[in-house]
Amino acid sequence: MRRVTFDLDVLRSFVTGMELGSFAKAADRLGRSTSAVSAKLKKLEEQAATPIFRKSGRGLALTEAGETMLGYARRLLELNDEAAAALHDVELEGWVRLGLQEDFGEAVLPDVLGRFARAHPKVKIEARIARSYELAERVTSGNLDIALAWHSGETLPYSRHVADVQMRWIGPAKRIETSLRDGEPLPLVALEAPCLLRTVATETLDRAGLPWRMAFSSPSLGGIWAAVAAGLGLTIRTDIGLPASVSAMTPEIAGLPALPKMALFMHRKDAELEPVAARLADILLEAARQTLPKNAWANDNGLRNVA
Image (cartoon, rainbow, N blue to C red):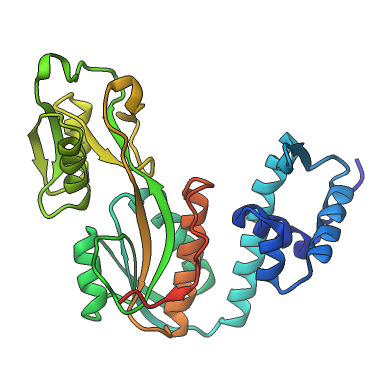
């Protein structure tokens, strides 16, 4: 087998185009012409010695080889960027305070902490797992530098719209009868108020004219998963961080109303973060990008004032 050395610049054009859903947008993001990006994609197929794209209607889709290439391309770029940051910011010291929703605790936090610690061993990280309201308050008060949280309606001075993630009805993995038959109220499982998803669940059922009752309430997400797995009722979350004991339900099959999407935001304490916090924010966003569904990533990825 011939030895192939993939061009990282080519891979960056490829990955950026797939994440933005358009290679024209990728060209704009990377400061290159569309023809230049097209040339890089052609070079990628030449290096791979196999088709990466296939025709799909008027556009392009990935072949099986292309899907495989995309996964490896992301990993290669991640390692490249980590090495560059480690060399460039080798003297970074200090500490940074990070906030995350419970949903992202197991799905994102280990990867983020591991990557950051390897690149910047002299930096101390203080992480807090909490609900969106608390995270927003702590960023506003200056007790957190950055936080990845569901948008709770709070208007913070500096926020970045990361994604719009579909909410799902969640039931037990082992199907236990929980139905709307005979007009019986649907048993709900939810976090203690105030809770954004609790409100969405009750308002959605009210609009649909479906009766409900609060069957179980807990201050922790772990308690919610235990209650749902035991068949006490249904809850709503996203697909992120679901344990094996529960599973997402298809609304049409279960006779449940459709749910909206929920906005995910990166909150920042200041418009311009300290280098340590800025580097952690970059790693956090990249980890979130890899965890979220492909169609969830927001097109508006710029820092914006939402107040």
